[in-house]
Image (tube, rainbow, N blue to C red):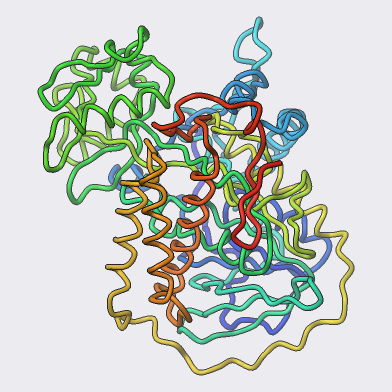
Length: 532
C-alpha cells in the first residue's frame, strides 16, 4: 500500500468575516459543490458556504470512521443497471452524459491527487465487461473523491470558505437570484450579493425518524429553492436502505448489501430466517422487496421497539475481516464482534432521489440559480438510485454546473443589506425539537416505506395544521425545522398524487405500475403537483 504523506487541511482562505459581495456562491462543500467551485475559480471569486465545520480526512479512530461507511466503497459505470434501477423514469440523455463524462472527471481527479497520495484506481472490471470500476484500496471511493476535490479546491486562491454559515434564503430581483441571506456563526443576519448561486446541500433524510443521513441533511437547498419559486420534482422517491445499525447511543451507520451477497442472513425477532417467504432469491432479493419484507416482519413481531437481525456468524471470520475490514473495525470499536454476534438492524431513509429540477447544466427554473448533487433532480436516477451513481452525479454535474455558471453575465452588484442584530443560536427554541420529532415520526409512519392513501392524507393534514407554529423562523434550528416541514409536505403531496407503485415509492393501495398515467416525472410548483 502506498504511504500517504501528511496533509494539512486548512489551506483554504477561511473567512473571518462575510463579504458584502462575491462573484459566485456555492452552498455546501460537497463533491458537487467543490467540483463546481473548482470550475468557477477561473472566472471570478467563489465563496463556499458550509453550515457546519470543514471536513477532515485525517486518520480517525474506528468509531469516527463508521461515519464514512456507505454503499459507494467502489463505484461502477453501467448503463443498463442504471436504467433498470430507475424503473422506467431515467432521463436517458442524462444517464448517457453521466457515463460518458465520468471517466474524464475521474482521470482528472486521480491526476490532481498524485501529489497527495490518492488511493483511487480506475479501470475495467474484467476484460469481458464494459463496466469500469473505481476502487480506493479498500476505503470508501466516495470519501476519496471528496478528499480529491477538497484538496484541489483548497489550492485555488479564488476560492474561500465560510464555515458555520447557515443560508436562510435567496434574494431575487426581476425573477433572478441576486444575493443570499445567511446567519453567520454568531447568529448575525447578512446578505451577500452575487451573480449566481449553486445549491449543493445534499438530501433531506432528516424528515424521517430513522435515517443514515447526517444531522445537517435538513432539506435546506430544496426549501430555499422552493421559496424562491423553483420547481422540484420526483420528491416521492426516497430510497430506504434495508440494513442500518439499530442500537441505542450508536449512529445509524449503513451495513452494505454486499454482506448479504456474501452470505449474511436476515433473521426476525425470534431469530428465524424469513426472506425465503418473500422471494426465491431470499437475502439476495431486490433491495426494495427486502426493505418491505423487513418492515412486515417488524410489524408482525408486535415488539414495542422492533428490529431484525443481520447474521454473519455462518461466514468464516477470516472472510469477514478480509472482505469487510472497515465494517468489522467499526463494530469492534463498539465492542461487537460481527463474526460471533448477530447485529440489530432496521431500514432507514438513505437517499433522496428527487429534488430541485435542473437541466443537464444544473440550471433550475429560476434564473441565476443552479443545483447539483443529491439536492438536484436531473433524471439520472429515475425512480430509484443505483448506489454507485450518486457520487459520480455530483462530480459530473457539479463540473457542468460550474461551467454554465461561468457564462452568467455579471450585472451591477446588488447593494447588500447592512448586518442586523444577532439572532440567538442558543437553546431558546422552545418546542422546536418536539416539532421536528413530530414531523419525523409522522413521515416514518405515514409516508415511509409502505404508503397508503389514508396515511398520506393524514400526514398532509397534520403538516398543514403545523405550519403556523413554524412561521417566521429566527434561529438556525427553527429554520431547519421549517425546511424539514416544507420538504415533508412536498414528499407527502407528491407520493399521494402518484397513484401507483414504482421504484422506491410503494403504495399498498396501488401496488402495481400504471404506465399510462404515471410513466412521467412529478413536478411541484406553488404547492401543485403535476406529471410530465
